[in-house]
Length: 383
Image (tube, rainbow, N blue to C red; front, side, top):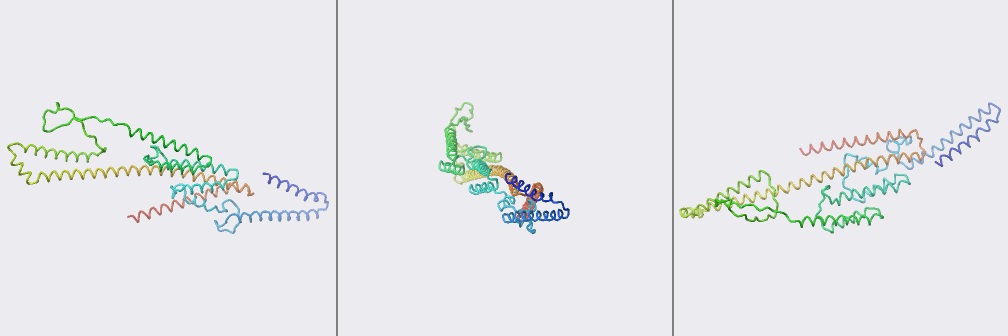
């Protein structure tokens, strides 16, 4: 602002010095000649000043985007830096890098902050670090049922994670991050210990014996506690019940054959080994059913974990889309302020912003077409 005011004052003094001799001169021919000479000198000075400004712009920015003669007219003629082109090439929808190291994220924050004016650099860095710290804590620590993060981890791993999060924070917030992380770990460990120490309530059941007819008068007997809680579906439960009923029928038949009138037949049946073979077959079937049930439970658990991971990735993708869009808006404002500071006429700024928007839309449409073509080619290759 001060430079612009100084330039206006210099221009006013220059005009007064030029036009005062014209006012005192009375000859018309001399006035016309002197006026023509003054206007030519003014045009020469203006051309000289703008040539120097354009030469300085060409030395700072590459002009290979349009492949023209190198004349800078509007904002769209100035090529963007490489990291901006890379960010635009990723796009808010397609080919977004979801997992990046803290070093890369910090480098991105510094690059975006360098594009801002000097008075906003510190604010951009601090806000970027706050966003990275919050996202890194949500993705790595979690420690809650919302983010589907495993709670059973060794104390060494959890402390290492707390240190990593603290290292990503600014120096003045390192101690606070460490103390808050340790408080969260301590509270979670106490809740987990209290849950494990809580006793389970079990209800005793009546034992039914096929040999006894007086079922109602039998005393209640305790039931052995199971080591694992098995959950079976309807088809598995029916198959297990069928095998159990067959086994009980065979046991009942064997017990009925133990009477005094059928000892000879029972002995022959046991010698032949048919009953023993049937018992072994049933046991093998039960083992196979249990193995299949275990495999099914494991697959269901893996599917649930995959669903949780997909939900978390979708959330991170949406957050990254918001960051990319906000970064584009910030970069647009930064370049607009830089062009105003460099003396580009204000009349071309709306056209420059319009060309920038058109450039972004073209890039996004090209990326969408390439992604769709790659997806179609992948589907054809799989078929």
